[in-house]
Length: 415
Figure 1: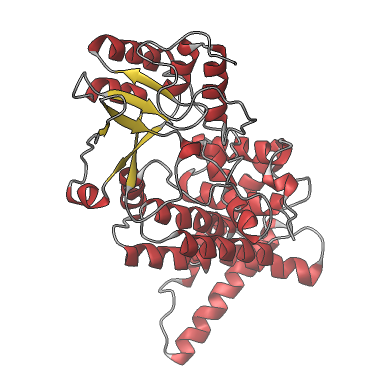
Figure 2: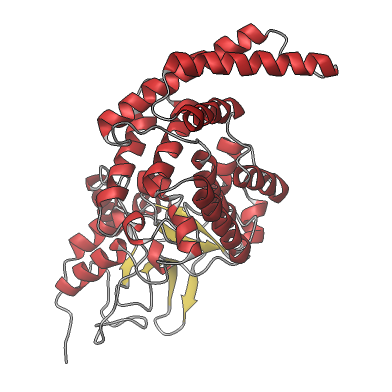
């Protein structure tokens, strides 16, 4: 019979339902892979390093979480077999499908070390799985947790393609819709194909939506999601000037000169103002100023496209056809953020993800074209021609998604 060599500090071999994995087991993510391999070697230092480099989730009653916003509490359970209290934590790949109750809070090993209340409680990691372990939590043991947390403080998964190997979606309309949000997933280091989204935990997913979107209710989330799916969230001026360029290209063929583009935009703006005045409808109070604003925008777009070509986001001679990908990609993520915040269930989130993928396919001809549109929209909104982190993060994500053999952009046909 196989046995494990070595034990973790404060760990008892054979506790719980785990033990040696006699049958082949597929770790759901890179996290469980590291834990599994460290445990198989009996390398508990490496095991704690892996724990310190990832997020740990523990279950909380949703009524309690809603009644105590901003607070986190550990709820241990009593095991009569071992006569111990355990606080159970799960790594990302071991989380169950999101349900209305309970919800899961996410914190780091260092946080658990600092906030632990009772030295008689034990920490149970992924109990009942081949990568499980159980750790005593005396002050001495928690100092060891803190040591590993400090040692791994620079570790990050951001900027990497991460895939849910077991339970993830790989092909079909849902996978296509999820892949429309893959730029953000790579940038944030989250699992691109996880439909059962917990994200950064219930409280932080709600905090994300409140801070960045002003969303605190299901109704507000639904409104934002619908606007994104319809391409109505981005600045309409961006799409207007790109539509004008597309019209010029269709009429004349070949490359569109910037002066010609600017001239046509001004003509359209003045023509619309005259038509509105003739109907007695509202229009721009100063058509000339509006035309100059849009001409300045054209200059920004042209400069971004030049940088995109230099960096490989666009091929030579290509240009961005639309920035609606900025909305559709965020819609794919908004569906999942809403699920993490429990503003919807899995079925509703999945239907929204499929709609995001369908909208993207109708507007673009390839993953690369979708990516360029998304990145331009993000840069026009955030970057202000600084080509800083708002751009660099997306450039790295684009390169990963267009070169990594496991990328959905290489394994899922665009149409």
